Image (cartoon, rainbow, N blue to C red; front, side, top):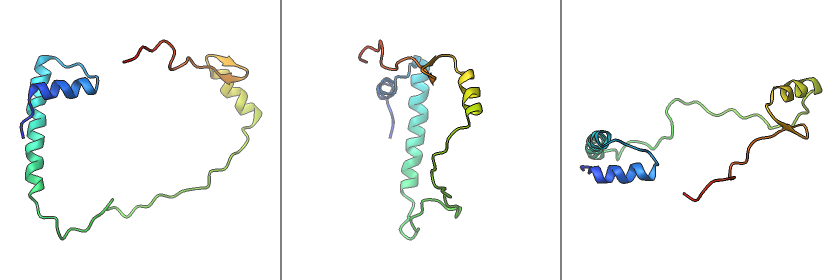
Length: 102
């Protein structure tokens, strides 16, 4: 399967990535090579291969999520490092202020 430069431009537009014409051409070639390789891999018979999510045997170890009070001296040290406070809490700029529709 060969990917055209126009398809690369569309993918870059969807990903909001700006590419130069040279990059568009190069990515069309490299992505096409990957897709060709995938066609070869699709031909491999995996009928007798068991489905696996991972092969290391490792398992997640979870601990109970317990809320604990922060010691006042630790809280003060953290608050002292913050650039802007409002009512003893970190103040951050709004994420939706001034955004125009994309």
